Image (cartoon, rainbow, N blue to C red):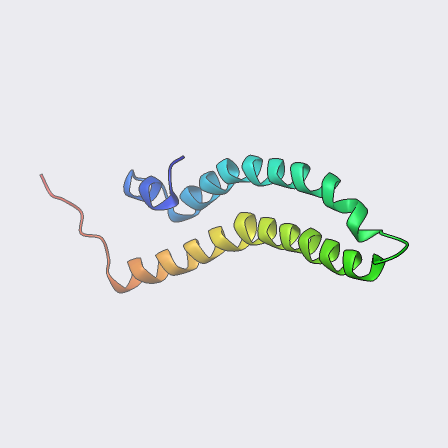
Length: 98
């Protein structure tokens, strides 16, 4: 998988590099979600003896996976665009002359 930084150095715009990297990252995160949630779902809706602790654990794992996916797919590319734009504004790239 190409990192957004590698794509940027290859000539892509900052936004294109971030979007392509996010598109490549999303299927892996989605597959993680599909693997974890069906097995952790029963913990969220636990009943009977010890249900309170199971619900707490299930809710934490369930919410954590959703949060991790949102951060990885939405916020990481957005932060890349913001930080890379700032870096390139402070230190403009010098075009090589022939």
